[in-house]
Length: 381
Length: 87
Image (cartoon, rainbow over all chains, first blue to last red; front, side, top):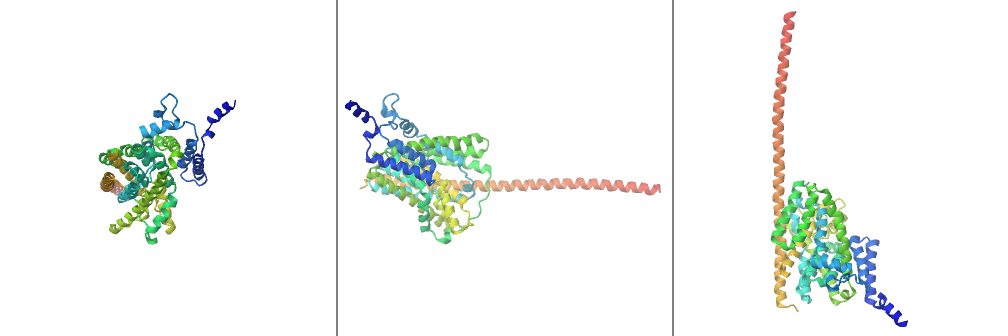
């Protein structure tokens, strides 16, 4: 009878629980708290938090991959989603991009095409973090995945990491989303450090109205140009532009609605939950994770600063000055980074309406980070 | 310490990554600028042409109006003449 009780106890999670698992359960709880109580990136942090909790509960089998399972009905739901949605097919990030494309307005970018360059300038942090990671002893593929966090684009980070360094997917993805949620805390002090009050007060002319034809031509043109040069960025870029063409064409409102609502929401649910479940205690309690956490903020910070500095550089040659704050929006955390640039500008000058101007480099940043991910894939994979 | 292979690959990745990103976004910006100019000029051209058509229509309308007025005046004159002759 005593033996039976012991056996029963061994089938419960309590038999293998340890302090690392308890810490991870608390971390998951913190994510849930911040998403609900502080409204910080709730669409990402809430499912990630729940994912961390259920992913770390022992003996559930939820994370068992269909490859490892070996038998029918032995793989777990998150193992299946991770394998087919990310590691094997990698379809979830492109589906997210379809939805983001359907939500994106290229109008400000067409009205001020020079700001497109800021989307490239704000990717410099990717390479700085990449080099630091290399010198810190990370393998080349992992260094590239860590660097791409600086692009501040969750789906791009996941897309690249799941192909070249799947062992650090959970950590890099979660860190990317954490820093995206922390944009309001990371960017303002950095931006204020490298700009003067006068620069932050620069008012920009209201962008012109952009016609429907131009809005349809741009995604088609961008898709052709980018995919011809960097074919490996096609899964992200093509889906992004397809979503946008659905929206701008005006003839398929149901498709545009589906892409920006139902499809995006379903993909977000499974992607975020699965990412959370990948953040197991085994993978977190390593020195490498702390290094990635540091490198992520370095990448993100340098990307922000390089965008602002490039905008200042552009002002040396431009007749109509641009507000350098929009350079910080070149990191692709859409639309948070643009909103932050707008808020800082309004602190200096309440009449300064910078949001449409900041949206242009913000969208360009999405394209820029996807292009760099494509280059990494082409060379490393 | 970083290996020579990693260092070389790192250089390639950095140079190519930055080069391609800047090249693509600058080319895209330039293409968007050119297309915008063409669209703006096209809009202005079509506005000018529609203005031209409107002025042609106006001339035609004015001519018709003038002809109608002339006919009315002539008719009035004739009727006046006949009135005078009748008196």
